[in-house]
Image (cartoon, rainbow, N blue to C red; front, side, top):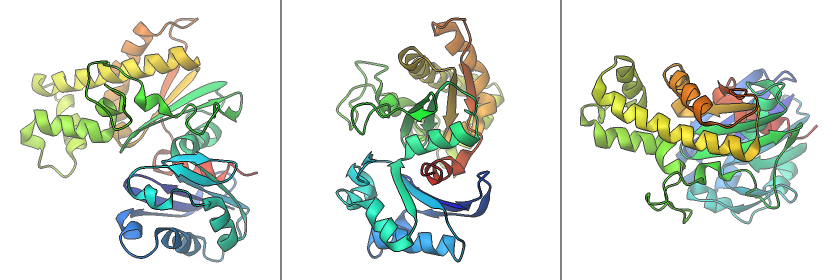
Length: 300
């Protein structure tokens, strides 16, 4: 059995999985339940023990949204609650408490690895995975290996491709970042600003995409701009990495049936590939479990 925990920007997801990635136990809780009371690291470890129970675990891992030194297991940089773990050897802390082989990896890389091994990226020679969630994650798996580049940020910053040099300044220091237009956070903000009639909904994006399906021109304008922005980012990733598969995940892709048809059409029109239209653009198959599964199977 394998154990995986996904430390996201909003939620903590943890599960025990069999060798085919099927969850025996999977628990999702709000991050604030861990970060606002007591010691964050101790809370995470205790939660891991609770999820595992008496199950014998072969290996496990923690996926976290910051920049990780995968060799040492130290979180080098993060924002939000993750800052409380910066500089800590997370790998050692979990191994000491849990007693089995443990990996620590960036959540986008873990998500991509899960999709590559068990999800929409299976059989790909080169797969780019992008997650449209609280932020905009990106990772590359090529020839059966995760791409890490020369440092901990290698391959991860697809969300910080600039799609508008005159766009708003991003927290990373760049301007017009894709994350500022196409993450779930950014799209939700745009919908609320543009369509006050649905801003009070508990499920803003779900309501928005439902209205897009009705064909109302007011909502289609915002939707078409989102698709155009997203297509720019994906085409740039295709041109940079040369994948045969692009997997899209995250909260926004709950409405994949609305998003994918026009997106695929535009990407294939703009992407310069040989043969034309060869890149498959797919929705994540593992969804919420992808990063937890991926990090659980990093150690063999």
